[in-house]
Image (cartoon, rainbow over all chains, first blue to last red; front, top):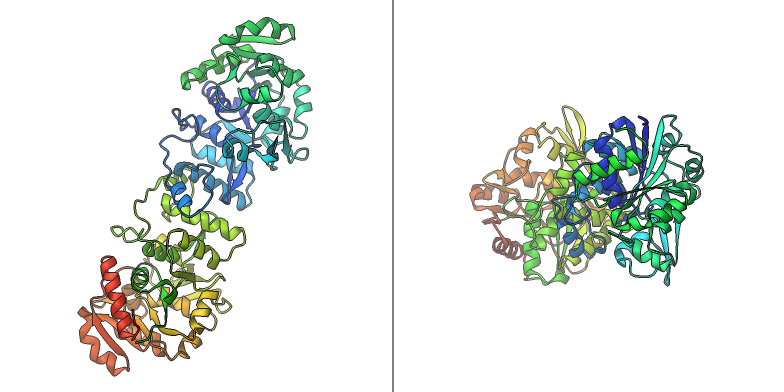
Amino acid sequence: MSKGHVLALSGGVGGAKLAAGLAAVLPPERLTVVVNTGDDFEHLGLTICPDIDSVTYTMAGLNDRQRGWGVTGETWQAMASLKALGEADWFNLGDRDLGMHIARSWRLREGESLSKVTARLTQSLGIAHRVAPMSDDPVRTQVQTAAGWQDFQQWFVGDQCGPAVSAIRFAGTPGARPSAAFAEGLGRPDLAAVVFCPSNPFLSVDPILAVDGVHDALLGLSVPRIAVSPLIGGKALKGPLSKMLAELGLEASNRAITNHYGPLVDSLVIDRTDAHETAALQGGGHTVTVTDTLMRGPDDQSRLAREVLAAAGVEY
Amino acid sequence: MSKGHVLALSGGVGGAKLAAGLAAVLPPERLTVVVNTGDDFEHLGLTICPDIDSVTYTMAGLNDRQRGWGVTGETWQAMASLKALGEADWFNLGDRDLGMHIARSWRLREGESLSKVTARLTQSLGIAHRVAPMSDDPVRTQVQTAAGWQDFQQWFVGDQCGPAVSAIRFAGTPGARPSAAFAEGLGRPDLAAVVFCPSNPFLSVDPILAVDGVHDALLGLSVPRIAVSPLIGGKALKGPLSKMLAELGLEASNRAITNHYGPLVDSLVIDRTDAHETAALQGGGHTVTVTDTLMRGPDDQSRLAREVLAAAGVEY
């Protein structure tokens, strides 16, 4: 069993939960969580980083488990005020959440990098583990629908994922360099494993893989690269993944996930409800771990983190 | 009695109340409220205009009468979040109020003038009368204390007006041009009166008078220029005026107010508790109206507005 460092690649909600689980079972010096920033956008003059926020709130234990996103104890007074003032209200900004957006936007405007801002804000909330954006350079996910290319949040929130997606691109790539923490994580001599958190491969993980040099660096690693499937019973627990698989002409199965990641991933953790896929996945050359991947709260998060680390041969 | 236009010069709380009273008794086309922007400042990346906000909330009937400032039904969740994130908490930002700051800051950043933003936001809240900043050019009030020159809000809120003030200046003047509505108001052929609202002469009205050309334009007017005293029983109802008069070596009386405004003001409205000053003020060449100047709510605001207009010979 390796006692080395774990590099976790995370999108929003599902990824955030596993990241929190890994943080619960690994000491701070043995974990780096790299977060997708393709969902980031500018709104009403604020820089909003939905996945960094999800990871931050979840790792700080502040995530709203009932609602499934955002921060607990949230209220919506500023949003009501903005609406009364005639401003856009398609993206819901909670009052507590706004503190985060204001602090981040201000620090960025003052010239701090997103990495530094993220480190500052996560540490302020008591998160000892390193959380870093995939890149300090802006990357913006865009989806192609019948209406043409549009920005991710406009489709995801504004259109509630309605229009069918025929293609996805990440504006700013190539050209976006990995953040210092990401580059350092990929190059560590004591790297023990890379964990692909259970996030949407197309929307949450692909932007991370599109950052300059990341794909090749991952391919060149000799440590386990283990993905936790975002599918449970062939469906995504949350978000548009199931719908997108159909729209992209792909089957709703873990095979679609491993096909998508190709040689970047050598090990897969799948849910018991998808255990029937095990043989096929093994036939494709993957190591397969079958367990309960649903994370209802911190206990599940830690349990799944331990199982992922065990599957990757990493001591915890 | 004139049926002409009234130009009101206003600072924050007290001025806002009289502005709301004037708006209650005059039709929209007969009133322009010009507001001090010397208190404006940049905070956490937001442009905050305290006096414009006070005037807006009060004219929209949204001001918090218990607290005496800000908007009614306010909460403080974003502020708690900002504090938890390690950001400055000396200036209290309410959640509802934040909607205003975010909307304004965004529109300004998009290139709109403060005049246009102010018109947009006041109209959105149902205010039919024209509310305009004194200038679209930034003016920043600074006070000199034993610690040197400091920005107004840092002293006013940060230091709670503690350090004695030996001098006041308005950074940005000369050079700040009157806003279009202010210039138009001063030049209207149908101008019937200028009302100096009951605001701090040094901190709230002087910045307005420091705008390029305003002092001379007011001097050149032949219409009544009437000031409502901010003193009641020789004391300011709110804010640091009483303290400042002492620190500047001035007596706490309406004579200090008329001495300060000099020939800019020819008529004064004072409170009954200061009626003993009447003869001396008249001896100084001022027309004096004695009434109840305390405004507890909309009824008082309208009543005082009617009395001010009557004293200025303006029909309502």
